[in-house]
Image 1 (cartoon, rainbow, N blue to C red):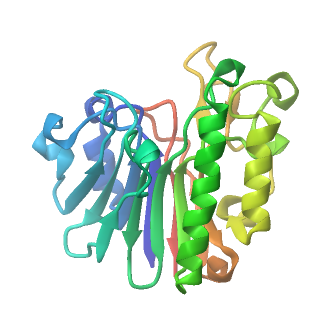
Image 2 (image 1 turned 180 degrees about the vertical axis):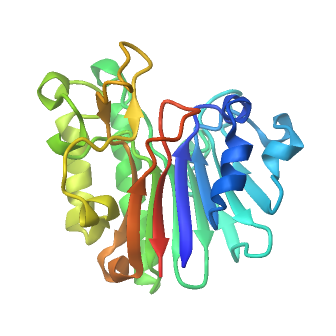
Length: 255
């Protein structure tokens, strides 16, 4: 069995102060993809950059304190290679790592926030298009694909607590949801929904108005796989008991 976790930590140094290393040591995933690191590796204390038993690869934004992704691997089971998206306008913001394993290609992705009044919606939609093209190219090369991370999109009404009130808010704009519809139509599956069709499961909560305590949340964090690979996914979970960020970790188990 292989466990792959994903977590938007909303600042890795803040997560470190909130018990990130203890959580990692306790859970011991085979791979952990994190998003919104808000740091360059040289700015991160060594115990957080390379915790005991793990090594990490970082792709940080050019802008300090913004965006960024990183992936932690068991020290004795690293991937064959780790590359970026190869598109300067997205690589500049540290959005994607492409991680090659023998049986699959893992993509650690931090999708842009479309922002109020659709200020970055065009950029977001262009990113979504580029992701579909990247996944399509990998599949044409005969590879299975896992895309994990913070998509900054609640796909369906079931994926947020108050869909009617939020239809014209970032993360639930119709244009964004339609892009995930297209992704699904292109032959990819939302692993959590493969196992669980119940409402009330979220991965992000506002820090305001006791939203987390009241479970007024959004499901923004995913593992999607190409449909041919879906039988290899034995479980998909949301770990909403884990604190330390406004997001919680999500995981899949491969077997």
